[in-house]
Image: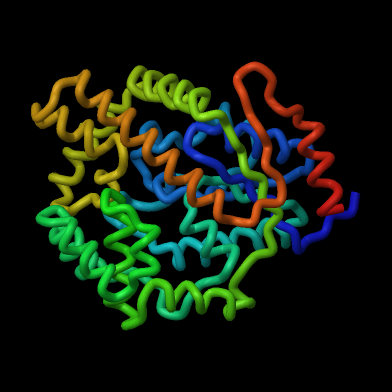
Length: 314
């Protein structure tokens, strides 16, 4: 079976949509390895809350870029994209196929369109912006509107990470996010030719999956995981920005006796549903090669998906 090496199968979709499960099934058929495209699964010690696949879920398929980074070390989309490029080339040089799998829209765009010059992280600037956001998020939104009204139209004020990152990019490069992202198309040497599969669930079915996964995470020790991270943060005398992630922040509040257990669960569910909605909105704007309709009663057969893939990559 001769496969076109320039086409990289990429599976995207909202949280809890079954991306890893599909990636493993396809990998077994094509003798492939999986590269994670997730902004939180990169962190060590956050296996439960970021839904990092277990050894059983990996199904003996090698997975890359999972649990390799300390929670004190944020990674920009540009840095992550470079790591993805390296893994793609490594897997191809070993005679296997890479399959990219994840729900990080900004990272997806970085590997698809390239990396703009100067894409990096300034931890000091980011900390100042995060503190300013916590004090008054509307002030940061006004700043973004004043420098880049077009980009401000697609950034929700409640999306702290994206709003902070937009202003960080401006502070580092002196150019607006729109200007920098427009430069991505010129960096043809730094992009991948993707065959993108998007998993599309009915809203209610996805919410049901999100609810079920939260119960599983709590039953398997998510609260203990957060408690350990808080203690390590104190012992190491370091800030763990990753603890601002959905779920971790709410569990921190619960452990600090600021909210009840039931309130914590409800807040996590609401935040996760909102996140899934934003992911869908982001991916709906991308050019997708194959949209796979999913439901709880009859999921698309793997053979049908493989047939669509073969038409492109064989």
